[in-house]
Image (cartoon, rainbow, N blue to C red):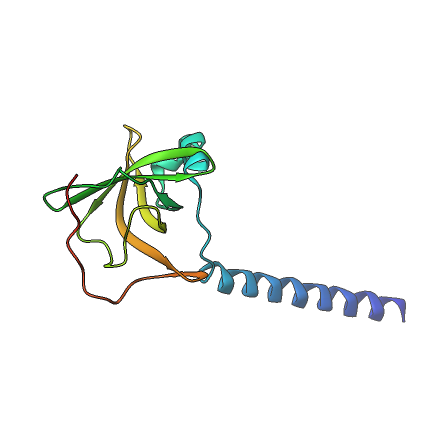
Length: 136
């Protein structure tokens, strides 16, 4: 009787572990975790991987150079320079919270190819038409 109980316990443990692995892998793609500028600058491996970076666009840092948008992103007292190729969402503004996706280059500039602007209490892409950004 003791062997049957041990066998059942082992089967239940394997099933629970398998279920946990499946749930974790399913949720991994749906989470919208992002790093702060301080975390990215402290992590030497950050330059080798694509990351999401969150923070506020520093007022007065926004400038346009042709198709390139350059701005500073700050969070928790640390800031990082971002170069975004292409037009950001129409709701993109200085002082607003954004989450960007891209890669940290060797020179410490974050090269972004995707900007998501904060709307209310969640981050999502804007569907409004793009408005031109004044060059400063």
